[in-house]
Image (cartoon, rainbow, N blue to C red; front, side, top):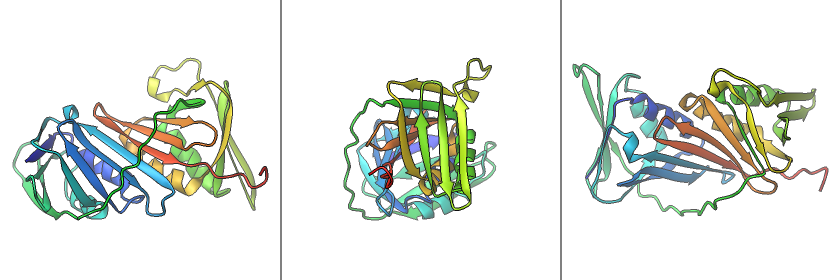
Length: 260
């Protein structure tokens, strides 16, 4: 059987909020090392990869590997029934066609349990190659979300230009243009407020803002976000999840019509 208990149950609620608008259903692969999920969005433009390591749970047991087909909107609805302070336990028998979700208040005075039907999903696993990236930008996640939201008012695509001294986000549309430049921070008291750039070579790539705005739904999971870019390969937007894993979004760059 599989059983995972998370005292900080709000993490799981935030994970579902980060996924459910981009992907409707996905296979949760459960093993002794943890829970992972990999799925293309419904329009096959972006890819999401989630890892929750078993050692990040307060207790974790998995006797044999499971592949659970989950409707993410259904799971999100059930998790909305859990309070932010609740302890959440996930449980499934080896050949189960349902997943049990148990929510307990810290004082144990209220216990809610839900059963969610699982789905049969045919899933193709895509190999994600390890890459060296030309530019890696680490910045406050709230700042990235705000820039994507602000530039969506101007245009439907953003050019992200990375140089040694800073990173620039630019959009243009019928009403005009907008640019936001962030310089590498020299001294910051709090590490999660810093902008740091590791650059091997400068990169300028164009991405669809509607997808970046979907990715920023993961902002509550982490105070920082990492953007990894190289020419002609997908951008990686990574949010760390406490001490237990990450969610990574992959988005291929748009072809610049003017330069081609």
